[in-house]
Image (tube, rainbow, N blue to C red; front, side):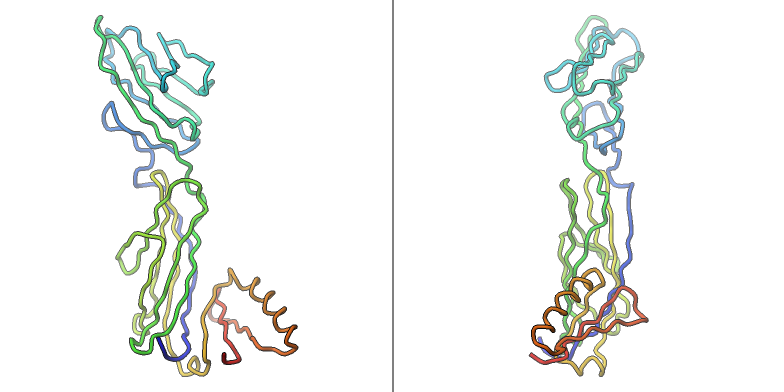
Length: 267
């Protein structure tokens, strides 16, 4: 890869997406899986008839938590259970991740034991922070374009998936390599981190150019302000050791949140 110095500008915007997907998904039939967020309430359907039900029981794993409309309070759900006396649906409030597990409703109907209803509840932490996006870019003289390498990361403790969206195309994965030409103008990249109960996104905009001014330097790349303070501190120490300014920073007033970092000495 050869050519002049790259001038590729990035502007950050943040997009928060909550809702949609499988959020607050209830089972469409009696047996099934229900996904919920920490702190939510969930109503577990018994699917029992309104009449003729005797000996209704709810179990969590192997533990009996409700029997004959009596709520047992000596369990992890103390103070958080409500039983509908007519439908026998069970409501669990203030869900925690530890509440994930298998619930079963057992009863007799008109003297005959009915089929057991089994519900698998899965409780996840919602994603609360937008993902972090880092990038590197270089100018390819042969293709007359910028090659942009992007990485997306998340601090979420729960299992998450990553996807990138650019020009109405979406690909999975936490990394992406994309070519941007000067003719493309502003090109938006959006990273989305998601789990089954929530998602958040962060977007950046790239503009590629290879101007005569940028070709004067031997090497160059752009860094967003997220790293600027740390870099300034390190380079001040570096310059003081050699007793001469070897590195220079320039910031463009026209472009916010962008630092153009230029080597003043060829290596």
